[in-house]
Length: 311
Image (cartoon, rainbow, N blue to C red; front, side):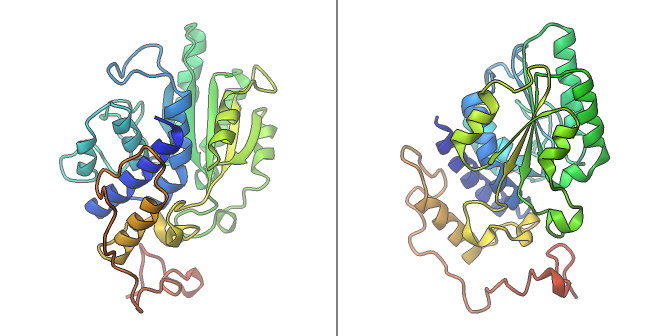
């Protein structure tokens, strides 16, 4: 499967999973979809029929709240039946809202931010000490880079010359309550990683050729880890979700939110892919009514937040 096809399926599964469960972080799922798709389609070494294969590459989603993206990729790659995706975030399901190692193909449970890179660095160091050639990839959020533990791990990785370690930052410029810059200014983020001795590449995080090139071309400094700063758009692929902090916590509700999201994705469906839920699209989608204007509902300057609404 091509990475562009997998990315579309991740987005479509993500919409369905969060819609049916009534929970999840769809904005983050959509922003990270292209990074996850390129990793699983073109970069990672794995065997779906043997998730514990010793020579597999390790992948950690440090921003564990985007779990639906990884579950979708794993199901599409054959780690478990795709029908199980519809159990996401439901009682008794192993597909927890934050990524869980109980799921085949998941290396490490994450959710509390700031420690995925530390775990990845430990795995990378173990591989080097044991003479194994597997690589370790970790996706972090930009808001997660506020955590001091991220920079402790960055210092550790440079000290031990972990050239088998890659950190990808899903830089969608929004976090739970506001923009990343308003919360804790990050720029120049690339210079920060470089100051810790890492190779640094900054790319468009939705350009699959750029992602592949960043992850596969030889590093400038062969004995140093790699940080890829991927500029992304929160909610990418669904116009009314893009660059909108409302969709950090929100899921597509029944009615125009779900119908319009599905319809937009259906129109962008790449050749060779079938929609597993609405194979012919939605014939007569519900459209936003006069009360559907979200412009005031997510105006942070007026004190509104979807998780903490005014009473």
